[in-house]
Length: 199
Image (cartoon, rainbow, N blue to C red; front, side, top):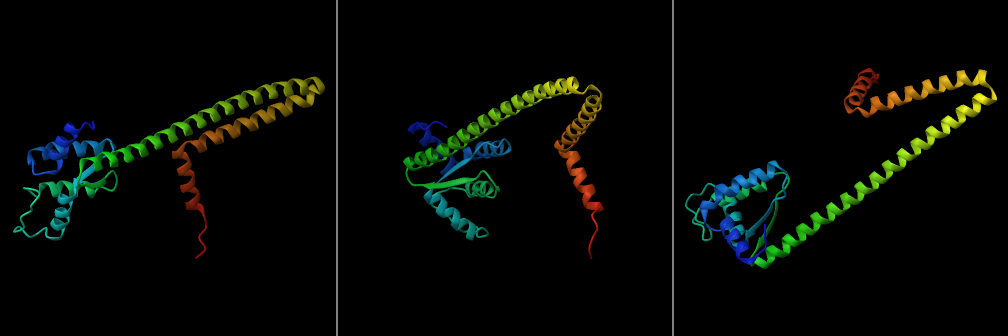
């Protein structure tokens, strides 16, 4: 959403005043945003929010006439959004500059989180590269050691190299099996079924 004063003012009026023609579009956009995990920032006129609190306490009283809205549909939409377990950040405002300040704070938080994720991603990438390099160094050292051992004592070394290679292959297979979440959960479930009970 652009923060140009004219568009901003028109958008806020469409959402939170008595212009009920905007509500079906808003409701559709809110549902779409929730489905796609798009952050929702709810800015409610402080007078409308005060009447929303009155609406909540007098929901079944049809005789109440609200001063700042023409229909309770805005309250129903607001209630629907606030009942969401996540993605329902709300603030009230009396001036449009308060909306800008609040959104600036929200977006600064999102930007900070994004930078943090990028930094963590770069660190993980660097760590992954180092692990790959260590793996290659390990292979090279193993080749050197195999060659050296074969030159010193070829008869004993051949059996030792084969048994160690087999052991390493088994460890790699076990690691791959444990990295598969489904098999890991299956192993845990099997272990828990076989665990003796001490009743």
